[in-house]
Length: 250
Length: 269
Ligand SMILES: Nc1ncnc2c1ncn2[C@@H]1O[C@H](COP(=O)(O)OP(=O)(O)O)[C@@H](O)[C@H]1O
Ligand SMILES: [Mg+2]
Image (cartoon, rainbow over all chains, first blue to last red; front, side, top):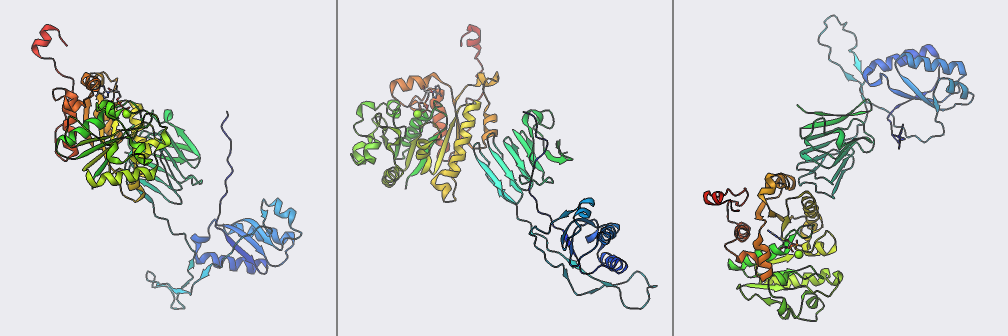
């Protein structure tokens, strides 16, 4: 049986929706530049969904996309009034998602906060610099699942939506799974699968590597390919550009 | 209230019945009123090892089916005071035991006894799970070989997930009893060492019983091997019982016996 060349996975992605109320190129660009300057790190290389409230000609639309890209935004999809833009959208390599359901929340715009300008006395005594703080909600991390007993042959432990910490050993014939990272403070003799829902950043750490199988985000390594690396040593497993690496922790 | 101890292993033929008989006898010898129950319905082995097979009239299943009272079925041991046997039936099928029936018997015995020793059948299925369900403590009998260790590991997992104590969020106290230990074969790496098994199972070691001809002799005579106080196996079981009762006793018979000067001279075994 040959190895599969690809896997299909579902994902959700947080991105910014830029609602275009009206488009006058110069005015648009200066407002955009100002907005980005207020929180450069937040906007840089953000993937963007353009939401057109007004009809644009193909040329205007091309210009709009070019302006966004000039300011390091990455428009990838478009919705709203897209009539007459079909081929342009295709040519620009974007997707028309007018039909898809997406939920939007306004980015909370807090009251302007006064920034303390202390380092420069040359700053003119005009209006103090105003900084707009942009807040966006971040999911609170679910606490790790901690297992204080050894995981025995025939048992399975799954940490859904979190890291998994095993304080004892994981026997041959046992299986431990986590959506996040896995830590084993005893000997890992069974199977360990981290990032089972596709998290490629997930890692596996263990105090003593004797695993039957180690897997991250669907990619796996079997025992015969672990034995010649860091067998019976403290080790970690992680993905590096699609390759599952296992190395000794020193 | 009696302490209920299951003698279990997963794998068959590792020495559960031999150990149940020896440990029950040892506890009784130490003055504790003890009953040993044969859960191996269909095989009926314990009464042979205890030497009371000819005195079996009623059995465990009769009691559960209310065909006999507990007192009619219990056999008082002839040699050892304080010791009783509840035999299994040879003729019934494995499903003859019910959870409610077993619970009732154990509840009744708990009032009168200090220790209830449950000799489990092999396997990890219903029969074995019934034997361990009500246990407070478990003696996991293991031979120093990979397949036996693996099965013990499985039964330990079941003990901590499917027993009554586990269901209540409590734990069952675990003891490892390594039996049929042969230091010569450990030295030649044909068998796992005590350290290997302890490392894999991570359960406190109750005892190491050497492979011994005394065990076969004892079962032929129908006298638990612990009564053979001259034999290494008998001594090792006595030590294990003391540890079960909380005494600290050093382990023995772990190393290859050095032949004495005269034996070496004569080339004897
Ligand atoms: N320490 C020992 N030395 C030698 N033979 C043993 C020892 N322990 C058990 N045996 C033998 O192993 C066989 C299985 O023992 P048994 O107690 O019936 O196991 P189980 O109840 O686990 O099936 C029996 O023939 C018994 O005599
Ligand atoms: Mg038996």
